Length: 372
Image (tube, rainbow, N blue to C red; front, side):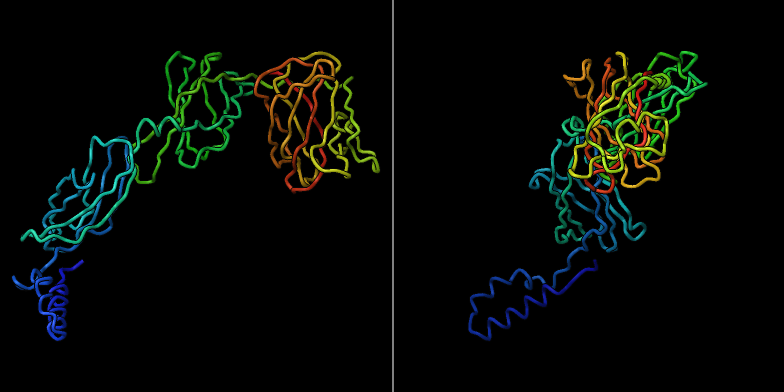
C-alpha cells in the first residue's frame, strides 16, 4: 500500500465544517492531524501468511512500500513482540519471521510496519493456531485392512490400506529385512496397497501415520506406532458337505441361500423382496473350523451390489457371537475379508445390511470361509 495523505485532508475538511456550524471547540479533536503538517503513514504488509508448527510458528509477508524499513509483530495483547528489518527497494519478499517457544493455543497477532521517520502503518490482524502434544494425542493412525504374504514369495508381503484422515500425508513403516537389517519405508496417504519385499519372515513390522495440520505447516506430527503381523496365504475351505439355509429369499423365483455355496457364479441368493434390511442367511460348515475370514463374490453383472454385512459365528447354530461389521467393494472380483480376530466355529450367519443402490434387498453369488 502506498503512503497516504488523506487523513490530513479529512481533518482539514472537518475543521472547516465545525467552524461553519459554530462549533469551534471541536478544533481540538483534530489538532493532532494538522498541527505538524500533513501526516504520512507507512504502507502495510501484504500477502500475510501464518505457518503453524510444533510449539512454534512462522509468519511470512511482502513489503511493497519502498519507504518501509522495519516490521513489528505483536501477540498476547502486545505483551510480546518481535522486530524484523526489511528493504523493499531491493527485496519485496516474502520475508519470514520465526516465533519460537509458543504454547499450544490460538494466537491473535497485530502487524505494523514503520518508515525511516518511525511513522506507523495501520494494524494488520492475523489469527493462527500453534500445535503440540495435545493435538498429537488426538491423531488417529490410518487403518490397515491387513498385511499378507505373497503366494510364491513368502518373504514379501502386501499391505491393504483403509481410508486415511484428511490431514494425513502418509505413513512411516519400519521392518527387518532378510539380512536382519532395520529398514524404513514412507507410504503416501493416497496409497491403497503397498508391497514390501525381502522382509525377515515372522518378524512383523510397525507403522505410524504422519500428519500436517495445515498446508503451510512447518512441522509434521505423528500418531502412535502400531505393531502388526504379516498374515499367511488365505486357504479356502472346501465347501462340499456344507449346508446354506434360511427363509429370507425370493421364493417366487426360488433363489435360496444354498446358491451361495454351489460354486456357480450365475446362481445367487436373492433376498426376500417383501421387506427391507437386514436380510439373513446361515451356513453349517459341518465341523468346527478355525476362521480367519470370509470370501465373497458379488452378483454378476453388478447391480446394486451388497455393501455392509455383519458376520456372526456359533458352535451350535443357536447362540451367536458377532465378529463385527464389514464393507464389501463394488467389484466383480473375489473379495477376501479378514475378520478382526480369528475364531473357531461350526456355523456362521451372514446379516446383509445395505447395498450400493440404496434399495431394500439385493443378491449375492458366492460366500465361503478361509484360514491363514
